Length: 379
Image 1 (tube, rainbow, N blue to C red):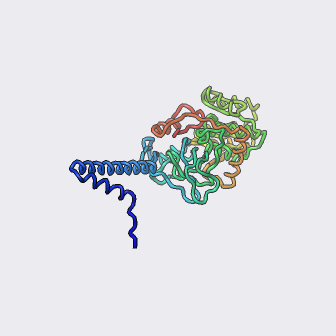
Image 2: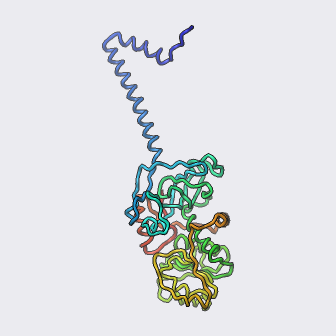
Image 3: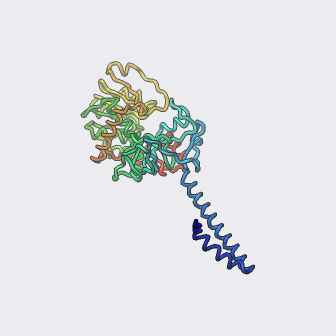
């Protein structure tokens, strides 16, 4: 039987080695050459391993115990999550910051997340990887979601494919991160809870923030008479540019009377309330007969007089994004994509922060002087 021919590197190396071994100097040269080769191979292995290792980790904010903003810890070596069969891995470019995330971080929200926890639901970015059964998206698609599974204050997140939506080219990633919770909440408050109708008058009480701007745009597009309040001249201008027919400064003494006068004493049909622990008592004075107050935001308690409700048969309704049904979600999404196509859905991006100063973002969203658009993290 013929012996197998040795591999080319062996045929080449040994003749060279035998020539070198004819002298001491040759031996030293050979040993040096082998050492260099081994070192180069070892260096390549280290570089490749380092690159693979770096590609497996991401920066992400983690909460290990409930408390103040200082409990938001930025870590540099969190493993990048892998999508399961019906999930999408998204490389995040922007993430919205919502007040509810501050309550959850503090441990004061009724639903406490398991720890450690990465906050953030509203993200926009690019699909990095899809699960085995995902057919609606592919790597490189521009998307947004308000249903992250692993959190949005990070460089990557995983979301169920039925909670991910294509992001039109005419909207930036920052605008994409301002769609989710603000627009779903505004639509839910207006239609699913307050059951507004075209030609009714709606007051957006605190209209310059993310949900308020969304409510103004939606209400105006659907034929309502839109009144909006804000606490600064800049805020009032922003609210008017985004759909309000008339604006009022809620920091001015007597603004409630001005709203009554504007409605000829009839009041408003619907109020979308962003700070009910401050405004609810006044809201009840502003309602028309059969009027409804939809409470979106609350940061404490307030005393009201039920007699303000009884004669007008008015209603106080709570709004919670987390209780949305699949049917309501699909309806809302259809309305939003119509708005994107028609051009009236235009998220307004407000203050921008980075992962490094996320604690300041949580301070400002609660204690800041006033909201102007949607607060986001640029990642």
